[in-house]
Amino acid sequence: MGIKKVAVALSLLAALGLAGCSSTDATTDQGSTSTEASSQRSIDEILGSLNVDTADSKKLIEALDTLPLADRPEDLIASVLPNGVQLQPGQADETFLPVESDDFYLSIAPYVSQTHPCSFHSLTTCVGEMQNVPVELNITDAKTGEVVLAEQRTTADNGFVGVWLPRNGEFKVSVKSEQGVAEQIVTTGQNDPTCLTTMQLA
Image (cartoon, rainbow, N blue to C red; front, side, top):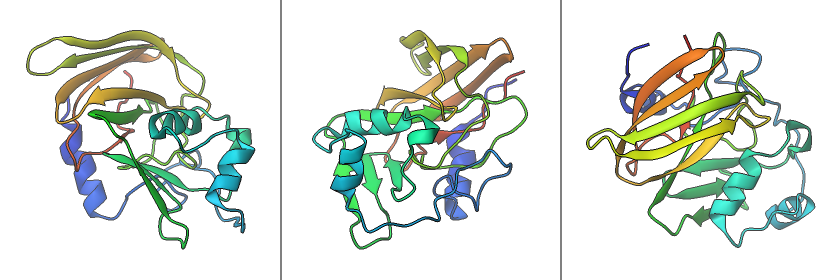
């Protein structure tokens, strides 16, 4: 597969209002989990029940993104934005926790046959096709060729693998597994997507 400019494609999705993964923007049955149930529990109560606190937004993002699907709370929505994480967007107790660093969180869901559109990664509803699958992940600076990350990883129970990249950069992302290889160019600016669901392995 040739290298694609993912920022352009996903920015178009954002313009259409597809801000994150949900049952309304999934193209397949695996595109999301139900979030219709509601509760009066506070954010602190919900996160406390998961042994997750809000003291470190980066650790919070990582913890929620790697949470087993069976443990996902139905009464919490958490979306990763380029500069932090937004909890319960659109609700009275909406909270924004900034990432106080020059890091940008990108969550990647490689796929073979099924995917869903996404711009800003939902830590509590997004589900990718390749769950708990070993992958070889390589990321280089698109301008200098410098290796930013080269690791053997395993996708989480939600089918995603998350990485921290420098903000305001341009990177070539390569994912390889037994199912094939995919490459894309991504950017990490203040309006760029945090969710990458367009890497089809071939």
